[in-house]
Length: 126
Image 1: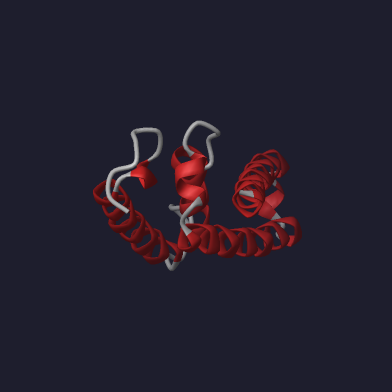
Image 2: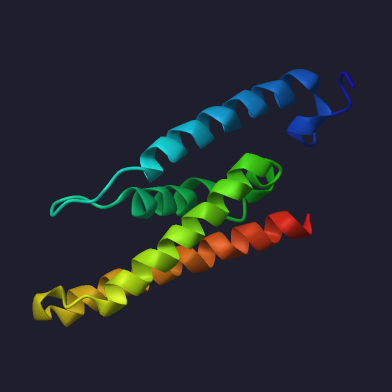
């Protein structure tokens, strides 16, 4: 392919290769984080990965570059599935009567899931 322009990283072999290596490293790090189990003091892997997606991958000004990577999109789908489970568990949990905290967490989980779904939809429509 060689050099074709400066409009997108895919217009350069070298930039495209570097982006591929970067995406693979990100996917590996996020997959590792996805395995983290929560304890009483920390968030779980799916929650952490969802927050990272929301901040670095899903925003409209950067998502096009990430949406080209099939592994990132597949990981987003896996995180959505794990968030579905997290939401169900949180809905059924008692939360020791702390319904305000329960609502805050459920709202955040649903927001994350909504943003990841929008990212996946964007990727599938590209």
